[in-house]
Image 1 (cartoon, one colour):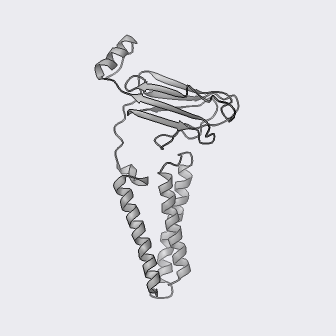
Image 2 (spheres, rainbow, N blue to C red; image 1 turned 90 degrees about the vertical axis):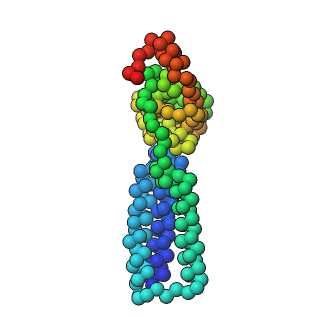
Image 3 (cartoon, helix red, strand yellow; image 1 turned 90 degrees about the horizontal axis):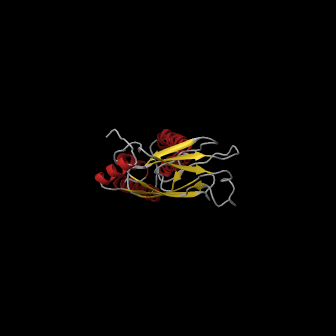
Length: 220
């Protein structure tokens, strides 16, 4: 057994798996695709190298300490993957349903990323930065980059639920909320920019009455 190749392949596999977990565990989608690609490449390289390291030089010749170390690694990885699968953590969260989407709301709420938001000395950036919306009435929020300079921003949920990716001057990002709750978000390249959306719900008859008073027609 070629120990050097074996341990390098194990390191590549562990690094690749860790990178994939990080990608799906709160890291902004702004960097998601790049991290996915690099992590998958490292994982593939490790998997391809491992058999060569184990078989090179004839049957493996390992001592008790190496067997114990390998056993601990296998146990830790298995336990971690099992826990992640049960709790829906990391990439396993893709297996759990997030609930049906309810489409765009008949009324939109608009948030402006005002000029100068790139400057940490400026106190206003997302305007308004704390909004309340009601499901089935105005649960769709539209953010517009109103910077005067060619500066890109993101609208990134603190927990990774949504992420606009970088969008430049004059561009918009739209997201429709489907569940009640408080959703805090920030800008990845300018972390001092922060905002929140509080989503509430009302009984169906009240929603219909509000829309009727606002003279808003729906297809449902």
